[in-house]
Image 1 (cartoon, rainbow, N blue to C red):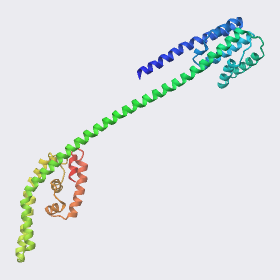
Image 2 (cartoon, rainbow, N blue to C red):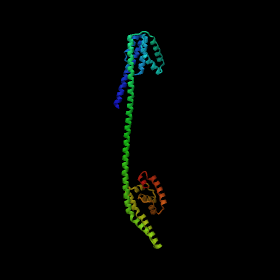
Image 3 (cartoon, helix red, strand yellow):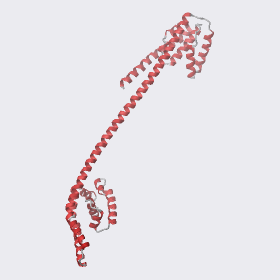
Image 4 (tube, helix red, strand yellow):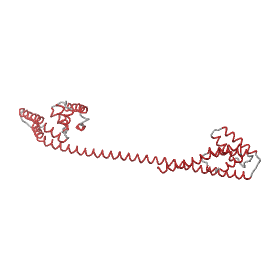
Length: 327
């Protein structure tokens, strides 16, 4: 890409160097038209028209050449050269030069002095003009090709940069996904450990309660006997709430990187009943089980869960985001 830009710069600089020297010769020829028209025409004939760099210089030369032939009273075999000036100045809306070229064309047609050498030189300049047109056409195609190449190179560079950015984003997403997978695996492991601990902690008590309830519903005994069973069930539930709570709390902290400790630190104003509900939720207990342990209906437990979630989101979620997974 850099080499291509260097080549373009060298070509432009070289062209500018050539084109800058020619207007000086044209200015000299214009000065000589009044003092030595023959020398002016000779100077114009000595220029290689095919090497001109722009159409403005070509039109200036064509106008001077036609004027020099008129001043030298020479006739032109064709209108090719004067038409160069007429076409250019008409297209660029330069009325003075256009009118001057048109008058010169009329004078060249009326001139009757035919010189063989002048005619040969004129025809040579016609050929050089045709070479100039062909070279200009090639340069135009070359410029278009270079422009397209530069655009294509820029697009390719942009696409490569975009692919690099996309690749970096993909790598970042893959790394993030890998981190989330590791975190998910760790959470699953913690949940499995927590379930195992709570299962061992509550299994015996719930088994006893279940057995007592089964005995109650199957019993054919007296009301006194049934009342005794109900009291026994109530006693076991109360014992479960009081005796096993600290063990459940410790099991939750062990398996969640001390989440409960962090919650109490960030939100010391949490109510005791809300904290107990949080422990039961973090332990994975169902709404019915929690309602049994709290002595409230399932509908009340649902409402308390919603209010607790809002409070924790306000006070704790920013510093302890994992607590929101409890809900």
